[in-house]
Image 1 (tube, rainbow, N blue to C red):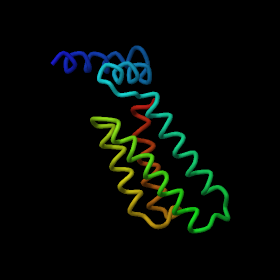
Image 2: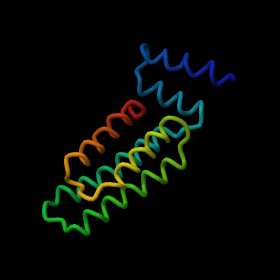
Image 3: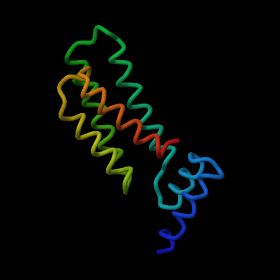
Image 4: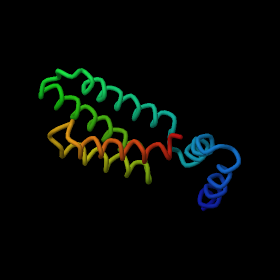
Length: 122
């Protein structure tokens, strides 16, 4: 019950102290490793992007990049509770269902997940 009272106060303080600092502190209060989570997401996307940027990547390399990204996100979602965990799991599920990493809907799903995660990551 105490967490329910403290968390809104911390989030409201974001207007004064900066959202990313408050998100980090609020994450610590409820036991979510925000910095570690955000770093993992950023690293997973960087690996995915490097395969895409290669230009001449084979279909197998693209599939492996997708599978690695989905596995990383699924593992992360298992470790993170609440809305952030649900968000990560939803993004991983969407990505797991696509067959073309360069398709507009895939790029849109990835960008949408990154934008949503940025609310937590600052």
